[in-house]
Image (cartoon, rainbow over all chains, first blue to last red; front, side, top):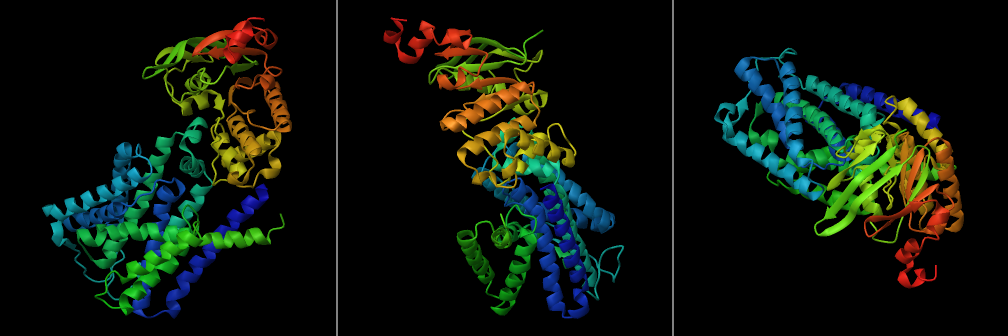
Length: 327
Length: 243
């Protein structure tokens, strides 16, 4: 049995390595900038959703306010860069640290809430964050911050001529988020989180400090999401509160995981690979002014999934495997 | 030697309701003690106070020579108190082995060791064949067994069993009784709450009878079953007259 388990984990790792390698080769064949753009966003949302999945999927604390950490990553990086000349690479890490600290600060009161009340609190807090940034003069208020781009530079992580460096960064981030999840899945924290999700009272009786478990999950999750936010800010070279902290980001982190399989290793990646290209394509083909059509499309998709496959698309794979198994 | 567990003058009030009044009991090392009494006697409350779900209104609880009165449940588990739940609380989306690993992680921080410990406990409790089944797919008797396995994986000094034998078929109950004996033989002290007397009495070394929140009597099971006070508590005064 142990052997089965070790084999499965090794197999996951190999599949991930192969997929990463294939993705890394994709730009050799895909020269179209528009398609490259979609690939970058898909990888980014896969990474974000994977990070969201740590707190909300594994630990079961559903957050619809992760846009806050995304925005904090973006703002910390760009404020440090434009006001103090700190390179984005350091800004990115600082953003991650700030987001993790804020996640724990917020967790202190809010992890006492359960179920729907916790979800509502996360939405409210993210909206408050958005309002604060819209009114914060020093941070550009509603006007936002334009990042001065002076040509291609790895040092400043900005590129004008080609999107490929962004593509590779997004790929690394996505692989990193996946790998962190993979690693945590077979660790004390991973087990604690799943126990907390399934039954906090029983977990507590088995020596799991429920509150600390939630705090740990929140910190890791927020840190990774903030790195994503920093990346997005560099990618756009312009940020304002709505474009890095809007509610749609919270949704776009949650939906791929829900679609693919919440609390699973592969769910977020699978969900993002389907959802994000679909969103982008419907948005551009059905009409630029038709804002919301994409929302209708994936709203429908989520309803179908929750009715037919409540455990997400990955359950298709495990179901097939169970049928094929001898016992 | 000090007893492993002791409650000293424990009171628990819920608003106007007194669930436990001045309860002082002790459990010695290596014993199997039964905590019995009619419905509403305060057994479950006392059990929860000992497990650390809530602190008592008044009085103190001592475990292994240490005052644990205000210690949270997770910390008591680390000290060596394991428990099961009357209404089973399995981790439903996890496999049987993963359920047990959660318990094993208290004393084994390396995953491989925790996994080995969990397998060991599954062998011990007779669940090894079900290791890779989801907890939600177990039948009720197996879920009870999983509760015990999970608690045993924390390597407790004291195992608190909350009605693990209630509601089982006679055959299942017999297997359960055998398991409790095996646990005690492994050197673990057992305190079990039950209200079905005929199952517990042959099993326990000593029984404590609670009634209306107070300790009614305590002693050897053979004495307890004949005690007129116990009979009247369970069946009403009329039946005790002739005893």
